[in-house]
Image 1 (cartoon, rainbow, N blue to C red):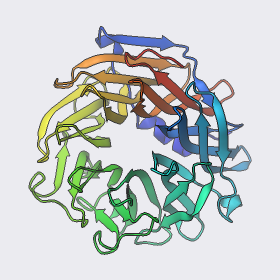
Image 2 (image 1 turned 45 degrees about the vertical axis):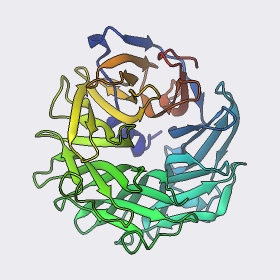
Image 3 (image 1 turned 180 degrees about the horizontal axis):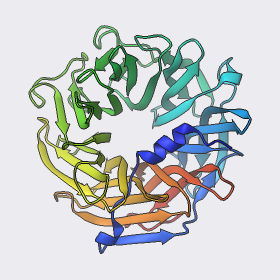
Image 4 (image 1 turned 180 degrees about the vertical axis):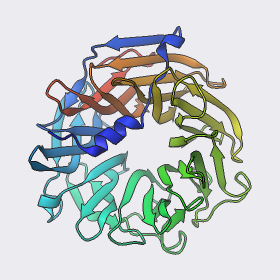
Length: 417
């Protein structure tokens, strides 16, 4: 079967670190994972711990291949605290366009009412891919009152949603990219609690940022304690190199100019850098994680940047081996350190988890590599209520298909399942 292009792209933009360079490194060969999926490819994009101690995974389910068209649908899995599946749903009947279903899910957050908000991209013949915001009820059914798509400035061109966060007014903030006359722009959408574009945010609920008439993208967004927003991704310069970029937007959807003098902070060297995740840190600053081709020991190394509230770099660190290493997600931990998940890509892709010590310049506490024998992808990590970590992504199997994976680590980085 023809494997979907998206999975190849995911494999090319993720993480690992050079375990052989650290005395705290553990390598698990022939790793055995808790997996879920159907007869074709399945990818886990994000995971949250649910109030009952279990986990909800969201991602994309693929069908078809060979002579049949490859289609994709929203995929939602619920497990108990041990990672045992309770239910799974492939939302093939979510619109009237079942035979032209190209739905991609990127992120999820849990809501106060026990439901979930998801963001991704939905395809139609008329408009191509559009940003998609959908609410799932506590019983894992779709809430028809919150099922929204957002088309960009040029109808028929593709727009993608990558990240969603909750806002203090019970609305939502979305990050992605939209196609314009200049190529792709970083795109931020603010909605109210019903998913309707908030006109108090940049007059129409949408904010575009284009750096230099090149292709840009926003991969992560969060509202911070001041009510402002941090948006991160990559912007391309006139020589077509990419910089790790973070914007600070006001509640009204304008650049906050006292953040690095113009509301936009960039980090990197002479080649390509990208940021995949942003989070406000406990000291009021922020942490970024992505990759760098400009520095480090391999073609691409993990790049982590700690930034103060004014947008000035406090420290940065490169983590990697002689392979291509990419970070996909970073979270501050309860001890004040950070945990990262992503991939190292050589002849195949391995999952890498890195724990950074608190109150350091990025010093590694431990790192754990998982090699399932083929291509393994770590897309998302978060800390669990017991101080451990939960991870989702995908693994390529002997049947030449990808399956969703769920990995639980304890606080010391030892795999529990």
